[in-house]
Amino acid sequence: MRIDEFRAVLDKLNLLNEDVKGPDIPERIRTGMGNVTVPNPYHASDSKSAYYGDDQKWINLYMGDPEQYQFISKMQRANYEKLKAVLAAAGLKFDQFYAGTYLGTGGYNNPKGSAKLENIVGVVGNSETPTLVWHKYEGAVAGGGQNHVYVGNAKYKLTDFLAAKPAWQQQQLTFTPLAAGAEGKWRVMLNLSNGKGKYTKVAMRVKAPTSLKAKAIATAEFIKSKEGVMAKLKGFKVSWTADPIRIK
Image (cartoon, rainbow, N blue to C red):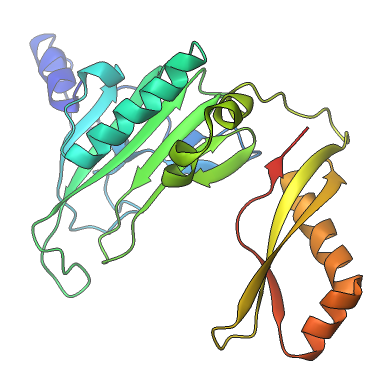
């Protein structure tokens, strides 16, 4: 139901007042990856929004059935259909959609002018422990957008997730959280860079209870290795190219 439709219903019931903004829904959405949450675009038009400040102008605020949502962007509609196909292969579907579209103002910090910047959060499963969360965010500043999915206790770029092999996609969708303190196997991609355009990638497999712990262990082990010491002496720095992937 759109917020304007909700307000119309309240008006007919003589329940509308200045404090009513819509259904009682969370301002942030759980991603299923630890304590990580993302902002709910349905609340974006609230005063002093964390998105763009006090002068924001929002349209198309939506909460409800994903199939009833009217996409602004053809590209995001196509991404939705691709995600829906991946989910269907696992017997899953989007259960809830939250969205809001910001109208650009054409100011210094928003060279996109009057562009319609669509923000979406799609949830698969229940809101407390979702199986997958799609987060499409468009920032007011050029290049400030992002498009990710949270699944299998990890965060991936939407393009990378959609381009992955079906078997891997299904493995993430059937992910079983580790018991507290239990160790799983992780694949960590490390990136070595000297800040002058020279870099190399190294893949490592480690055992750890969490994704963050896997990063720390892999980095420490690499630096201790002969190659890592040599790279460090040459001015190279170690970083992660992406979040670790749980293998088992």
